[in-house]
Image 1: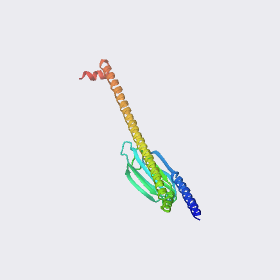
Image 2 (image 1 turned 30 degrees about the vertical axis):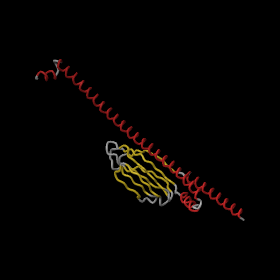
Image 3 (image 1 turned 90 degrees about the vertical axis):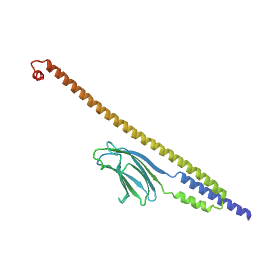
Image 4 (image 1 turned 45 degrees about the vertical axis):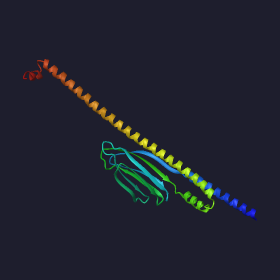
Length: 238
């Protein structure tokens, strides 16, 4: 009888271990939709993007205006739910970050409104991330509560989960740092291109002025030595 109880205990423990490993696999392989885009918001227009999100999923968006043309680097921003009710409205913001939990399933509308500008085109970079509902975390907590009597197993699992969290945090920080570098690189490139265009225009204007002044000088010199011309009579009066 004692051997039977020990066998049943071992089988139960193995089943719990198998269930825990399955939950860890689900937790580690949960899909996260993440995309980064750079858009051109034309003056007087609204650029909108649509994203399908299921209820209880997390929608995170991080945007920044990296170039404002000849004006200020800001833009209007709003998010609408599937029923087209405004969830977030922002006016004249250069950058911001939002985290939302979807209350209903459908198409969410994300808009960048540049109607505040009549002539300046804005360049906006934004990161859109959709995370699935964290059902695996709830199951993990329930399983840990059921196995609270097995101290060593819980301790080893907690240690492993902490390492996974540290790796995830480090990867996220590395990704954010890379995005920060890309944003500054795009901003510096736009500034260099804008400066190059300004130098080219100024050089062309100076070249045109030099040609006009040279032609005028040639004309004036020829009129001085042409004794039959009208300008020669004009210069003689002086």
